[in-house]
Amino acid sequence: MKRLTDAIREYLPEYLPDNWDGNIFCVGTNAALTYGTNAMTGLLAIYSFTLVRQGWLKILYNNEQLLLSKDDLYFYNSGFTVRVIDASPDYQGYCIMADADYVLTASTVHKTMETVYFPIVELRQPRMTLTVVEADHLCQFMAQMAQYQRSGHHYMNESTSLLFGLFLLDLSAMQEVAIKSNRHPKRYMDLYKQFVQLLPLHYIEHHDVGFYAGELNITTTYLSRIIRQMTGRTVIDHIERMLLIEAMWLLNSTTLSIAQIAERLHFAESTTFSRFFRRLKGITPNNYRNRPQEAVT
Image (cartoon, rainbow, N blue to C red; front, side, top):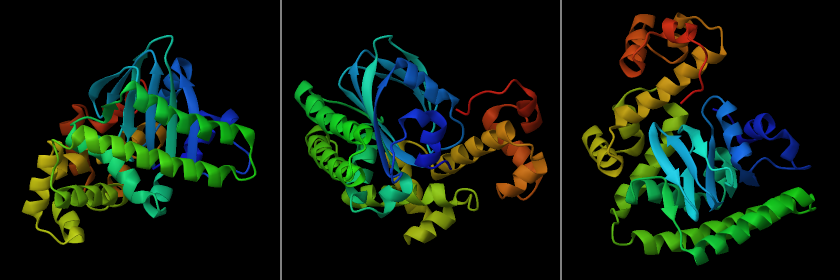
C-alpha cells in the first residue's frame, strides 16, 4: 500500500514542507484539489480526517455514496477506497492525513483508532455531523497544523504532532456525546480495531478467517459474529474487497501476467483467481485489463 510520503509526492508535491518527517500532513482543500485525488491509484496506508467548512462534497466510499455538507467530518481509514463523485464550486475544507505506520506506533494510536472507527461502527457511516461550535473548534487545530507546515517552523513536526494529539482528544470527547446511546461492548470494539489493524498487513498472504481468529486468540465463529454485528459485512467480505482492489491496481498499473498476479496474491491457481475476480467484478481479469483504464474504486 502507498505510504503518506508517496501519496503527497504524487498528489501535492508543491505542498511538501522542508524537513517534513512524513508522519502528519494537513492542508486546506477546495473542489479542484479534491477532484485531483481521483488520479491517485492503489490502496493508501493512511488515516485521514476531512472537515467540510463550506459547500458540499459527494464521494463513493467503498462503493457507497456519501454526501458531506458543511460541518460534516469525514473519516478515512487505511486500506479502504474512496472516489470523489462531485463537489460544489464553493467547496472548502481542511484535511489531516496521518501515515498508518506512525498511527500504529505513536502514543496517539489508541485515540486515532477510536476516532476513526467509532463513527463507522456506532453511526454506521464514516462521518460525523458536528455542531457549529465543535466544527469551529476543530478547524482551529487544523488551520494551525497547516500553518506550521507552510511556515517551515524549526519545530514544525513536533508542533504538528502535539496539535494532532489535541485534535484527537477533543474529537473523542465530542464522539462520546454523539454515540453514548448506541454503544457496543468495549470488548467488541477492541477486537474490531485489532482485526482492521491486522487486515492490511496480511490480506495478501491469508485469505481465511481462521488466520485472523488465531491471531486474536478467538474462534472463527466469534470473530465472524463480531465483524458482522459491527459492520454488517462478513470477514470474508473484508478480505475479498481488499484483494479485489489490489488485483485491479495490478491489472491497471503493471504488465504482470494473470498467472503472476494470481501468484502474488497467493491464489493456488490462475483459474481460481480468475473465477474470484469475475465473481466480484463481473468480468474476467483479461477483459478488465483490455478495457479503457479506470480509476481503482
